[in-house]
Length: 176
Image (tube, rainbow, N blue to C red; front, side, top):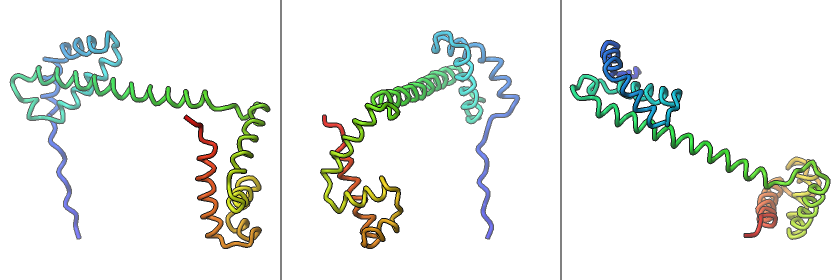
């Protein structure tokens, strides 16, 4: 059985792209510099993205009045880059905020508070769920070892662990 090869998308030729660059390159770079408030490197990236998009659309490259299309593509590329940068910065800030609010586990006082919180949360669990959590997470036993120690089937250990962890998460979750 042979698989038909998909044809490569049409692209503009090198002579057409060279002519496009000679004719419109400096105007695109000036426009991108205005969009980036003078950031030369970002402006170059935007113009490069514009030229790549033009290369992928040979039907436009051969058109007579291409400059408005190029300027629109340049503006869209600048917006895309701004949005991706803003998303990355927001995600980084969010991770930093969460990390700043977490207690330092190396601090003895923080360790004591965490231990007290965990004891209080474990006390809220049923004895069956608490036994499984303690065997698996505090004593480091596997599912099979926990099943043997407690004298219950491995499937029961897994379900009790699942439900116990769910209740434990609710017990230690911060209250609004």
